[in-house]
Length: 237
Image (tube, one colour):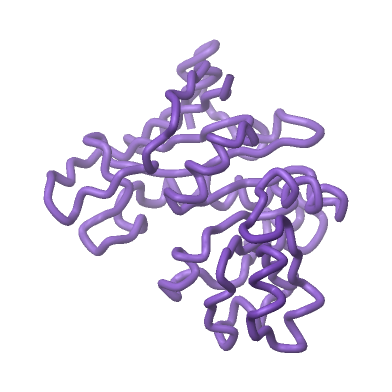
């Protein structure tokens, strides 16, 4: 990986580059094509950034204490338990971070490996009303957090997660959760990976975010290049 900004440099280690933050931190990590599509031709992200994107994706997971994912993304069935490759496991020095599912309804498939076979038990954040009315397996219930009464209060959720020791959080989407975190002023950083591809319009063009109530200002902090993928880091002001 090459660093283009702030000072040009070669042979950059992504783990060191993205591990430069300390204390409580919430970053959003997402990939999109050069023309702004957040999904590939199959409706997923796998075909956009290739191995370079996956290296940074795995790095952000290895650096995090918790991995936030929206319920709609979980319902695709494509999100499994977090795992670490041997090199990243050694550098991290502890088990993988838990996936934290944010669900306002608790309408989830509890038989997924995410809930039955995770090395680090998957956490679920929901509202008190949903927890009261929803059906949650006994094995999962100890890992369900209620934040907010009628709907999920993301600020309360983040505070509760940090009380549990999950200070450094990374959000992997989808667009609804990422947008809500930005609107709530909870995101510190956007890590945006721009793939060297054009997806065109129609059904293959998925927006990175939903509609923001107000524009959010970004401050560029770093730019890297690896295998044609641009890795942009922005501070959210």
